[in-house]
Length: 149
Ligand code: RB5
Image (cartoon, rainbow, N blue to C red):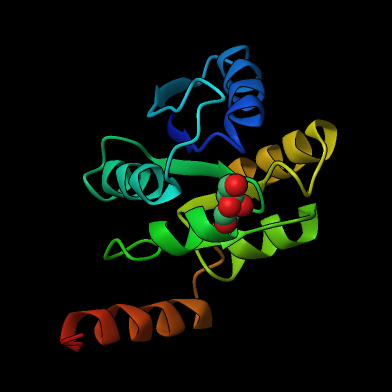
């Protein structure tokens, strides 16, 4: 499994904790940064992780900013991305089972590292249920295909 990671200055420390956690499990990481506390703009990182998932360079993505809000909004602008901002494991499980989310978004100023890693593990270990949920995801994709703005 290959996971793309990206974060702004508000999320890079948690991103690096996630990187270490996943690497220790033998998961390959594609790290899009940032890697310093210098202030950066989260859209760049959200877009890059989104592109990596859509191009299949990575199987799934994880993005982190202060709240997880800005970077999830940015990632969701990449066509085909379903980024889910999760603050607990239930949301992470549902994001995969019902929404087939392909990016997990986390807020480093919202969840502590212990909870964040539990959310990450739940997200990565839960398969999509398919069935009626596929129809709803297909509707989102069809809207993306036909929308002009
Ligand atoms: C940066 O200060 C902060 O705005 C950003 O990390 C994120 O929380 C935005 O949604």
